[in-house]
Image (cartoon, rainbow, N blue to C red; front, top):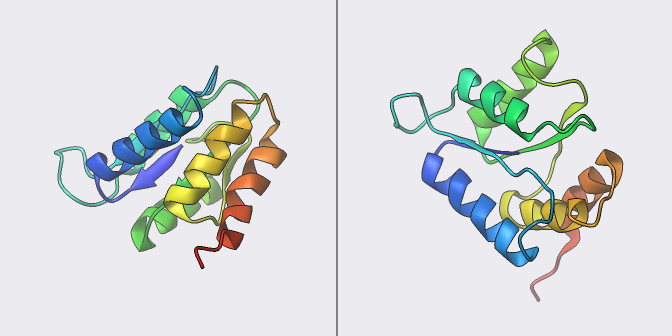
Length: 127
């Protein structure tokens, strides 16, 4: 699941990750971006709804882009009850982590492997 300050960014990264994974197989990739009225920001309600749509019973990996998106997810996790059981915020680069997570999840990997793949994306070198 992808959390961004922008609906367009979250949805675009989700489409990119799904496309690069060959369609994602049976992976549910959801996006929560922006506010309820379509502006920039974060919405705990949109995040909780998207996490529930992504949940297939094995946990949900959440990737967030910036400051308040991260803080909102952390608050939801700390308060409990809004996110599915097994929801987990992963410290990973937003785009590369999303691609790595979706590709890994599409192989049938469990939550730990998906989270690890996303986090390992920090090690991708461009030079």
